[in-house]
Image 1 (cartoon, rainbow, N blue to C red):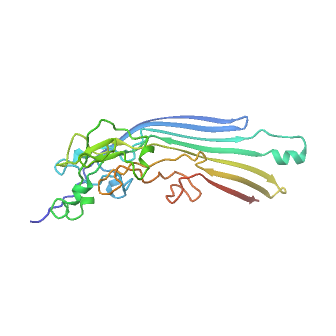
Image 2 (cartoon, one colour):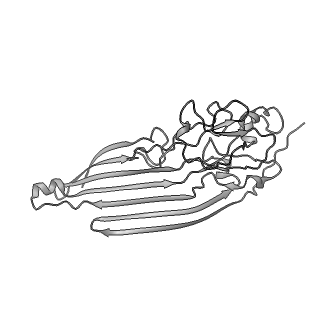
Image 3 (spheres, rainbow, N blue to C red):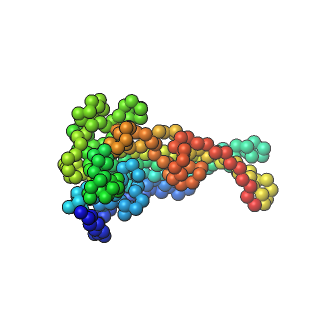
Length: 287
């Protein structure tokens, strides 16, 4: 028996949002900006299924082979609430004494703050799907050709606080009938659709910010020296990732990764070892 593959470009997406922004122009050395966005993004597959927003939680295949609309739900990157803020403050310390003023004057404090609510995720029955690899349904690549969603035996949908899931012996999720002592149990699916669809759950949000302290020295009329300290994630806040939502791993239900911060000394969204507090000393000469 042969397998028929059909490609369809009929997927849809939608976005609705409201953004409020407040800006403070320079006032007594202080300037800043505060932004808040309330929004909802929905689609049938995020990022076209080419580059999943998260390789752990993204669903890039059909939930129901007979109904593409069954995939329509909150997008992988749907942050319902988002707050960003930035500020620059010229510290008001001055002195009439020239030497003392060169030490205490000219300091600048600046920083950014980030907050967003959690991204949605799906609970996946990868173990059952793997057993179907030999038939025409999956074509031998079950992780990309099909999806089976787990159905919960609980009403909780928001997993913002996953502190209890970071232990190697504690899981937020478990499978009913396997002796799991996890507080939230799923039942393995016997079909492709169920009461709970794609991206029905919410993972933890993100809170972080950077801070910078800088001082300018005039060496000559032409040459200026700036020294400073840059602190990334200066709150040292732990942003845990979504509990692993796929039964194809022994750490199902555990939070095994942290979230990548938007900024680091290595650039925007650098993924390697950048989630802790990091400090950077800097000095530069301008002319």
